[in-house]
Image (cartoon, rainbow, N blue to C red):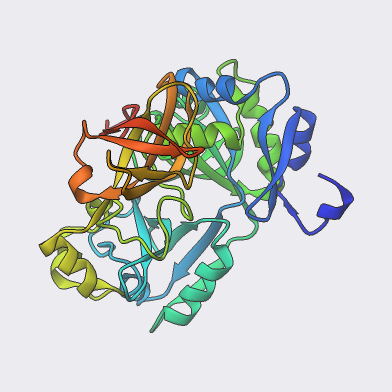
Length: 371
């Protein structure tokens, strides 16, 4: 970071990241640590797999919707069944456009008297504009810009939060509870984008640094950066918006049909419903798949995939080294005929074909706590 980066935003944990040796980089308009000195991505990745890793995800947008029509108004913009989402539960969702493409993905929590949305940082302004333009009836949008968001991910996360609140240890995956942790009022969701058990914790930004320091006092907790967050989600087969999903990819092509509940498939009433219904009935021409390249070198985003004759049949949308998988891992889109697990395709790396095997996702099994 330099003086030239004055327009880059800083989270409430910026000073702590610097103190701990964070290598700060610009990401979605914020200065965030990609990794930490004397640790590195592989160590930080394994921290989440084996213990508890603390990530700063305060760059994400947090929004509250209130008003009598909030559920119907939001259901007109997303293909998610919010009506039947129980209070205290959270669902993964996405905004769709008229051609069935994904404008952004998000998390929706049903609270007693409101809906809480967590949206991606890179799409934050566009998402808020989309909501303001599309929400109809008695509904009010409030941007929760006074909150920070921390993610504690890994098998020892429940033990860490349990020292302050026993109810945290019995929460099920994708449930959300307001609780007090280390004297701080928090909104706690048992979720995260690592594939591991863990939590996302929202609190007032002026309390975030002190709370993070309390977490780091526990022997099981260490900080991890954007690099580990990316390798974890890639092994877990989780999409990154702008890479693996965007306005030109549909939920059906992306393998996200599970996020469109039965009622919404039947009733429609969201942008692109007719296109998506057609894809559900007739199938799609391409599918998102997991990919294991041969050898040790990763295949990166944008790498073309071909059949044995050299015909382009798809491309890689995310790729890197998987520390838990022990080699390169990737995901991307292939023509449907080549999508079954076990198919061998070629990745064109520096003009030369490199064999890759199509595999089922997740590449590393999820460890979510189901209760």
